[in-house]
Length: 156
Image 1 (tube, rainbow, N blue to C red):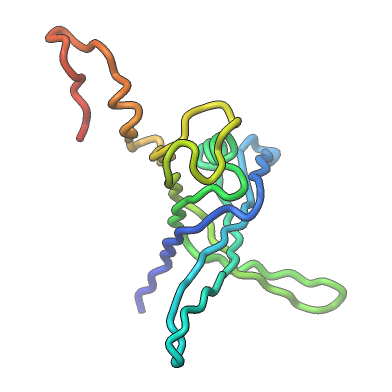
Image 2 (image 1 turned 45 degrees about the horizontal axis):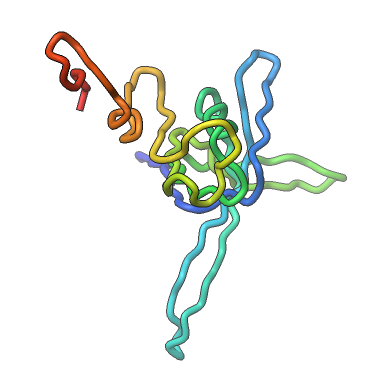
């Protein structure tokens, strides 16, 4: 039987990112994500539910997140669910978390944190090295160009 494990979440970071490196030199970061859901009750009242999700980011994605994000930053995370199990004081414990494979920063400059971390925020994305992606800020900030003096040949 086939299976499919894919999660897409949009929410806000619950704490400042803390980057660390494992002995192999790979960057890793665990962050908390608060995902809000607004729904109407049977009585017609709006109720907000917040779900807190632990997310682990690896490699360049973790490094970019630690540089540009902080508590409250809006972000989209795409990844997969992973069940961690361990034993503590003779009792088996488990926790479901998301292993983030793609991260997209949301919001605009000056919104939801990100100031003071050393750089512009906006629609930047970290992706696997094989994919070259450019943000609107990078493209609009381009001056000059090739032989014709126009915009560069961009892959989109």
